[in-house]
Image 1 (cartoon, helix red, strand yellow):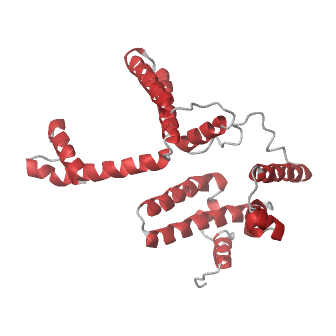
Image 2 (spheres, rainbow, N blue to C red; image 1 turned 90 degrees about the horizontal axis):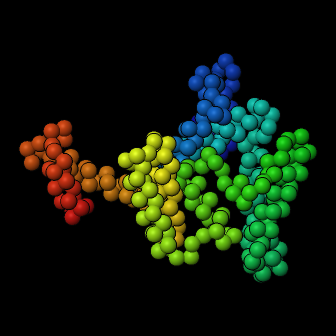
Image 3 (spheres, rainbow, N blue to C red; image 1 turned 180 degrees about the horizontal axis):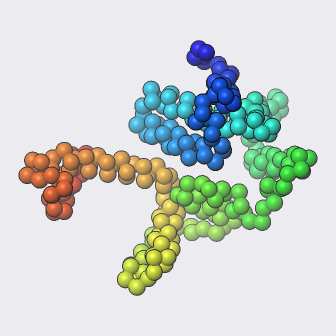
Length: 274
């Protein structure tokens, strides 16, 4: 089998890997749950390539992420649920439906994206999805009792916090002044400090969770993506810690033998150097 630019070749490769007897033993052992961690990992590797502006690596990582989509679709096909073509059909239909100002008739294109149209389209999709599931004999997926129910609980925690806050803000459950959020951070920090001395592990976890949740809220009010902000902070920490590692021997120490004061001095130098 030869490489190809056609995604159909990737589908063929995955089918071969999953073919009993002649396929790959490891690939044949996998199921949706066992593959999920790899899917999540590939998303992060795509983000990492973007953050580093490494287009060569991004090309490779996008391919790895596409492989995960093909993998899940193949396992669904084996169960008789859907195949890769169905995935493509679903997303192309959704994109066309959600952009009538681009793909609609002349009147729709000239009207542009009217206010409230996005919500109307999503409501129509929800109704159609419920009808389709009923026809297939499946339990309702969208029997929601809360505005927050469509924020997946399995989402990365920081992003989940951001989405929950955005949802709540749509009905006015929100601060109007970022300074009020800062005051809340101070309040939560005091509660963390109190639990450090007298609280249980569960209480400390609760209070630190509250502090992190409000910190995400401050980022949102400051029009800063908290995930991107933390990624930048992590990259900065890597650079500055790397400076310490690169220069510690000049101070007559190793990383293992150096005291905190020596490392702190180098950290301050790193802030100027990096």
